[in-house]
Image (tube, rainbow, N blue to C red; front, side, top):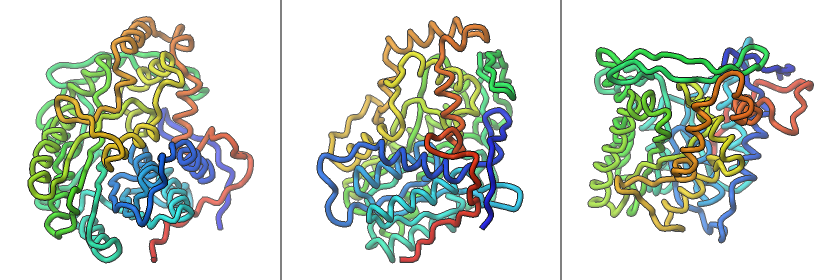
Length: 404
């Protein structure tokens, strides 16, 4: 078994290696932080499918589902294993840790590695639901962030882009140099051109979510009262030009329109529901790639401190609503809103004031940079309390076996 001493090596917010023990501990910490239900789930628990189960809100959905709702079922993600030169991706190690937690909790959780956009993966999941989980699926959580998608019908590959629509956007952003010193810069992002919007919607909109529902319904695998939620984000007016009003925002609007279509169909067919869940800001591998989001999130934490609600708590609340443990609370657009802690007028005014004042000289006073840096490093298993980073660690962790 290969053992190495691993140190964080990064280019901006992207790290070249991940730390297996740190990733495992971060998953265990999320599990412990997840609030337990008032009453322990009884019996086998509902059958759930989480698409995008290895990172960010999808990982939180998986862990919160196991602990809060007592789910069993399937998680799907796309991760790379270890090689002679590189460790596995952080999601690979987090998945292995999630499997250990599910096993210890007595929950039958199958974790699959592959392209969620493909019909091959959809067939594999449908076969598992049929053979292993009684042929009925109760819940589906859709949490996919990907740069590309190949349409199984046409073979066309679409690529998503992060661009404003209509005109260039100039915004502040937060970067760190090789020594970890923060700098606030202004960056300009060129507007979408050609078919950028259509390409991004094809990747990040609701097409694949709807295809999953169609595929499973076509096999007769959706239970009466089936519920599905796609995870989304709206965010602040400070970032809306690049996000909610940009190409990604167009994709999110398509996702929400898909939810309304699916909700009507599932209601008639099964007495079921389809919703989007609008989550609050968090440091994720996806969010750090968006201009301005790192600065905004650091400032938001500076305003809220521990009042910034972590993903595991948000997803525990989502599971309560999906399972009926709490009422389904929807906004006027039919969305579950888990971001109210972030978007209140008072919080946004305080963040906007800090945003205006933020520059390289003042950023350390305005944003919680220690927290933000640690959160980024923890995405890859570094800066996790309780880990001896001077000790060699085994890197060739196997993907979880799902033999019954």
